[in-house]
Length: 131
Image 1 (cartoon, rainbow, N blue to C red):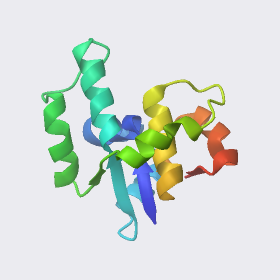
Image 2 (spheres, rainbow, N blue to C red):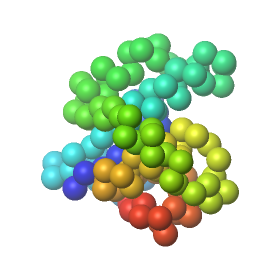
Image 3 (cartoon, rainbow, N blue to C red):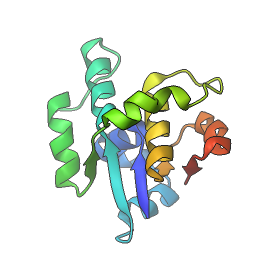
Image 4 (spheres, rainbow, N blue to C red):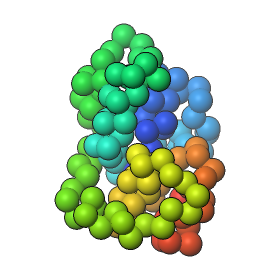
């Protein structure tokens, strides 16, 4: 199964695996799953780091993509098609643009989305498949 992980999951994978549930760990470790990270997550991490909203342990934001690749994750670039059609995703009270792009990517690419954010559930009626 193709699984897109949100930014918070990326941070837990790299810095605090204890914050992942058993179910999340099982999904991430299942060899039958291909796990994707969105390039928008790296932009979000870099932006939050630059304004002081995110502290990183002994790494800089530019090191994170390679760390994820080294751990066996696939980087999925946000393409022009996802960005130009993003307007089609209803707001459904969740306004965070990074989360909304990740949601839209999962819907457009028919990926399952792994997140700890309960607000994402509101997008199930628009085709989002959550794990």
